[in-house]
Image (cartoon, rainbow over all chains, first blue to last red; front, side, top):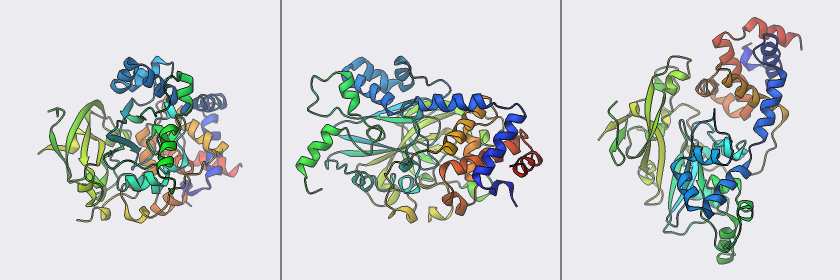
Length: 204
Length: 94
Length: 102
């Protein structure tokens, strides 16, 4: 039997055991890497978004050099691909997908969610973006253009959503608290706006 | 390297290396032969087609290229677009 | 020309057979297996023993039926194994011995 067709759990145990026995890696390195990976979560990206909403200079830096903008907040990007930030405006809505695999801005959002890696999302986002958005209840006005960003190569992309109305006077922590994972990929928009949409179209 | 400036009209090569043997390519099938416009250069990176096979990889310029979304599929909303990272050796000037 | 005919099976953008499939938006909690595979990939990358593109190549080499049947990190451990064998970091004999010893 082809070795690669071995049951996955057994294969992992065997590969791990051989790599450790040969001194290629250690248990401690694996544990350390898991711990470091779990430090990244959508809360990091949300902080960047909130700061971008409050400070024009930081917003400019986000759009110019997402990697530098993340590192300004102490978020480690070194070793990870460069980060690009896509700005939603009253006329353009960005939606990120990776049709070839599952490229995701992990340094600022953490592990990719299941749906981002699914065949349905990867197939549909580039062809039927408005249908995909509708599955999340995200309904765009007719005059808004959709820009689908297929993340194919060496960058990772996150969306800078629009600041929702009704958040005037909020501080950075309050703003960051309403920014979710999906808002920074573009399947949803921050809560304030979504609530308004539901008020306008209660039947949806 | 020739270099494409922002706004340059380009076409994605209508080539299908995956039909000729084992390859690793980062240019999605749905863009082959499609016309687009360079949004901006994104720097230069080692060619993934070589990296994938642990070969020495030349550094190649990468571009963000915009395509009209309905033209790709023959359906969709006018004005919608798809923006994709594409390596220079997959692009030709129109 | 129907581009769908020539595409590689991982190249999913716009592919007809998934267009009517609803997106599973439920959260799926990662398992210990998932986290461990993810971490091993990162450690191997940091030690310059496997690039992202080698990982991708190994995933793309999985036959179509298995590709869609396996979970995300099940594909990864297959690709990692494939690449460690290709680079000679581990040998098939070593892996078989480790599997028999389980």
